[in-house]
Length: 133
Image 1: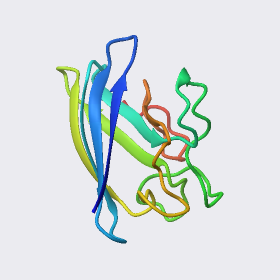
Image 2: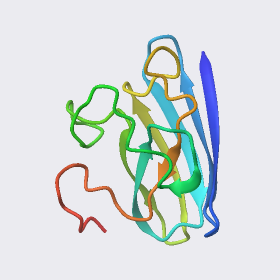
Image 3: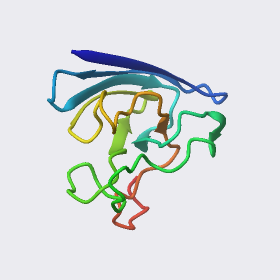
């Protein structure tokens, strides 16, 4: 089993921990708890770079080793890093579990060392609908 963890913090008070586990060639399981976010949907992605010195601006695009289009987690044609939206409750917290086969923890397309980003706004999931609140 391979495991990884990322600790998320921001100057706006958002914080939390996200855990990644993968057994052999099985899909990766992502579990997390976040707080300090506004209620509603928030895009959740693995970005190409691990550089967070300038926030989301320095993390590069969504991780996309297959050169695919932006999409939803259930879409066959999507960036590997497109993990959809997490739902934040009225208390500003979110707990979630995601199981995904496109974000391995080892091998040539490993996500280890890449940035995990929770966006302020919902992800349109490649559908062009930005009114997902």
